Amino acid sequence: MTAILRTESGKHLRGTLALTGLLILLAAILLVVFPSIQEEAEVFEEVYPEYLLALLGIEELHSIEGFVGGYIFPFTWVLIAGIYVAYVSAGMISRDVRTRRMDLLLSNPVSRESVVLQKVAALWVPLVALNVGLFVALFVGVQLLEESIDVVALAMAHLLGVPYLLVCAGIGIVLSVVIDRVETAQAVALGLVFVLWLVDGLSKMDPDFEWVGEATPSRYYDPSAILVHEEYALADAGILLAAFLVLLGVAVLVFTRRDLS
Image 1: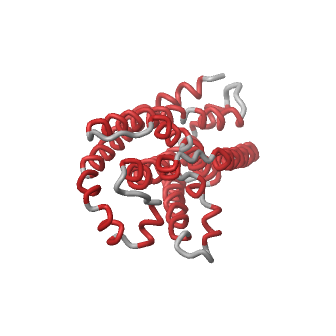
Image 2: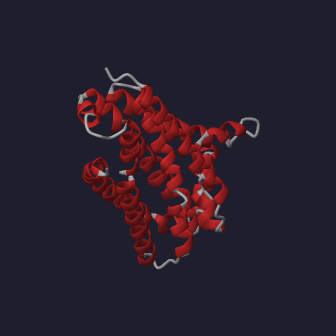
Image 3: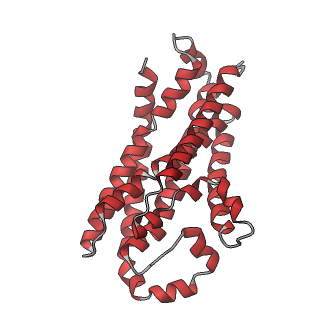
């Protein structure tokens, strides 16, 4: 049965279009200021505190690759898109349980495992839309600035970002099956993704505590390395995919054993 998948996919359309439009607008605004930043790149790097440079992973701010990878991606993709996916996922199960709609769903010949898997699979809508929308916006914007950027590297920056977003979704779906209250689950998911991103950046400042960042998903996704150095960390993407599958497995296990009454 794919009825749940189709229904949930439709529910994501409005929010996805709104977020895609927001990210395109934000990317456009940031690209507009790039020429000014490019002229004063050295000054910006001197003025910025060290922790902020580490947090954003800024490299070669004077180049369009460094600007996109260290300035645009951390805000639009790693932070905003990651928070959105976690937030949406955190309401997938908890909302239906809270409104008793889950009882109606499970009265049909569908297993609990299938419910969770189909709901998570419906995230293809925001994942595809955000990838395509932001890719086109960045590529066109760079051309309008009369700059050039490697299309393959830009595409890989988006593609290798998908496992990161899936981990954010995994965090949200686990919270969704554990916490009954929708608002609480979504608030915790939002805050957790933000804190993990913050911990990753701050841990890079001190070599003694850099190991702490190894437990954060953003540590395994570095858009600056992809765009500036064309380093495609496939192994890191594999780690993120494995983490997502573990989180999804935990969510399925908890939900199948949970007493919904």
